[in-house]
Image 1 (cartoon, rainbow, N blue to C red):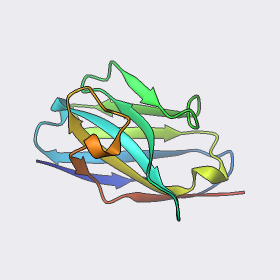
Image 2 (image 1 turned 45 degrees about the horizontal axis):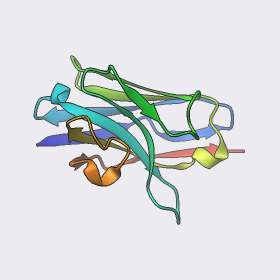
Image 3 (image 1 turned 60 degrees about the vertical axis):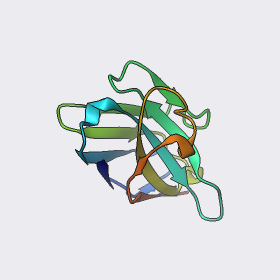
Image 4 (image 1 turned 90 degrees about the vertical axis):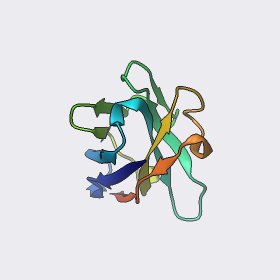
Amino acid sequence: QVQLVESGGGLVQAGGSLRLSCAASGDTFSRYAMGWFRQAPGKDREFVAAITWIGGITMYADSVKGRFTISRDNAKNTLYLQMNSLKPEDTAVYYCAAKPGYSGLYYGEKYDYWGQGTQVTVSS
């Protein structure tokens, strides 16, 4: 099993930046593909970004492409999401998640483990 704890959320003005972190413990972190998802009030959870276990492949939602960067440090068992040029519509609770294998990275239901989430609020 993998335990995930997100941090780094907060309140930022539009155009600003935040870096989210997701600390993993338990099973071998490097064995899992990792993803970031978000859920805004009254909306469904949506995919943000994903990265394979060795970091060779990354995926992004169109809404964040060019502004967000996902990365991982397997030596530190940590996943990151660098968020630049933030917009009010990026306001949501952000969750990190872990799954074995390479397929289905876009789909939240394919992930086995989830963190508790961290709130990101972007003011206009």
